[in-house]
Image (cartoon, rainbow, N blue to C red; front, side, top):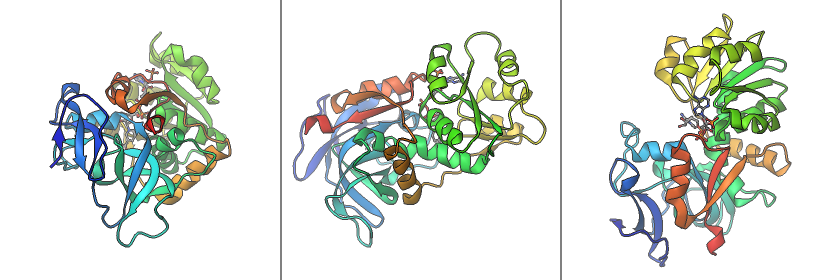
Length: 325
Ligand SMILES: NC(=O)c1ccc[n+]([C@@H]2O[C@H](COP(=O)([O-])OP(=O)(O)OC[C@H]3O[C@@H](n4cnc5c(N)ncnc54)[C@H](OP(=O)(O)O)[C@@H]3O)[C@@H](O)[C@H]2O)c1
């Protein structure tokens, strides 16, 4: 059974390792560095020495217990849904990976990326190209993976207009670039301070924190939008109905309840090795920038999650464990 101790991030033995997690469902006060026994990879699992990990809103939502209905965890549990590192163990029956391979992928068993060692789901893990940094690779599965799946399900065509609600974060920044690469016109809502950032993604910025959003949308999109990718929900989602013509498509990852009132669909995640490999190829070739804007040391994992939990990060935030090697 893992044990919780104070707030240090050192301590790595052959039998155990340090992770950063939470001891009970609740607020940030439940977060701790933990000493854990080294896990044994099972079927469809890889044990990885973590070099970098992605930090996502889902991490604090898991800690807060918002996913308890469908994600069973034995507490204490390590935070983090994704990581990049070097394979040190291969589960029974897993093909295509060997000890020593640089990889990145989705945390197995629902969490565990903020740690010196982590289990990844092999069927949701890909080899890391040498040209892709550890931090860029680590943040691809959740944000760029969600962007990829969302665009596949919304299917905006070349010349159509896609409106992204919440374009300034990890999913939005990736979705904007993937859509632009497919010839889609992109607009996105973001704080006024992110105007240049949004433009650098090839998208038209729509400020949500100034004048009335409805008015801003009508001005920026006089012909409306063909599709909406919602990463915010609530009032923002209610407002977009004014720029969506009959037959316009909405997909949400943030607010299925509100979205259902507009006939909008929730996202269905389809993570796979093939998708991750394709995303990494785009990064290696300079066709996709995961927009890692802030990198924290493992020791500062709590601050990294706090930055995401604030609700207004720029692009992606990552943990870099490699700096300690
Ligand atoms: N269901 C799934 O599988 C799935 C997968 C990934 C993500 N998600 C969810 O999707 C949401 C976005 O994820 P993410 O990784 O992109 O989050 P993120 O990196 O934390 O970014 C969220 C962004 O939302 C923006 N924002 C906040 N309030 C806004 C508003 N009223 N209007 C427009 N933008 C606003 C913030 O930028 P500003 O500075 O512009 O405010 C921030 O950059 C989260 O709720 C996450 O949990 C779901």
